[in-house]
Every structure is written in C-alpha cells, then in structure tokens.
Length: 93
Image 1 (cartoon, one colour):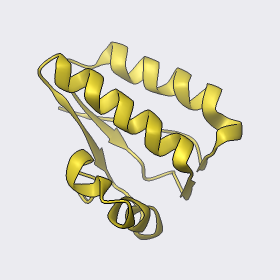
Image 2 (tube, rainbow, N blue to C red; image 1 turned 120 degrees about the horizontal axis):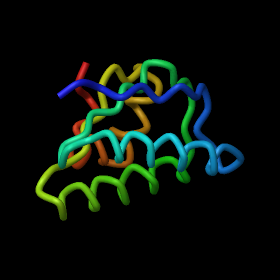
Image 3 (cartoon, rainbow, N blue to C red; image 1 turned 90 degrees about the vertical axis):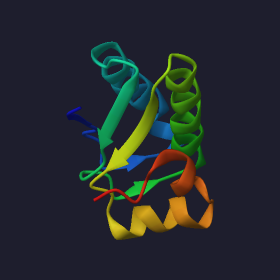
Image 4 (cartoon, rainbow, N blue to C red; image 1 turned 135 degrees about the vertical axis):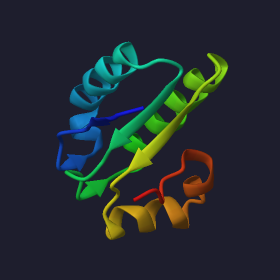
C-alpha cells in the first residue's frame, strides 16, 4: 500500500474544507486500507483529529483501516497525548 500525501502544512478548522477534499480523494484512490503521508503537516487541530478518526471508522467498516506515516515529532506528540496513536498507527515512520 502506498502512502497518499496530505499536502497541507496546517490542519485547522479554517482548513477543514480543503482537508475534507484531500481525504475524499485519498479515500477514492484507496482499497480498504489507506496510509496518509503527513510529512508536510506541521500543525493539526482537533478538527483534523476528528476527520482522521471518522475516516478510520469508515475504512474499518469496509474491512481496512487508516495508517499515518512520516509524522513529524511535534505532530506525533498530539496523537500520543490524545492516545490516538494506537488507534491510527500514527507513530509509523
């Protein structure tokens, strides 16, 4: 499975529509499993977290799941603190 790049530096409520379009494109290109490359992402908010959780649920319902790869240390810390790293595989390098 290849990783789909998320080409946004900041994932905030202000970027929600753009993020939704990015995730919809990624979902359309994916089989049940999807890996998102977050190497370009320097900051994310709870809006992005909720989008990732919703996408993971949708993919799991289809027999797959979501993995987040190339996560920067500061962004990885957000997943760790919220304990979403275990759910989403956010610590993959």
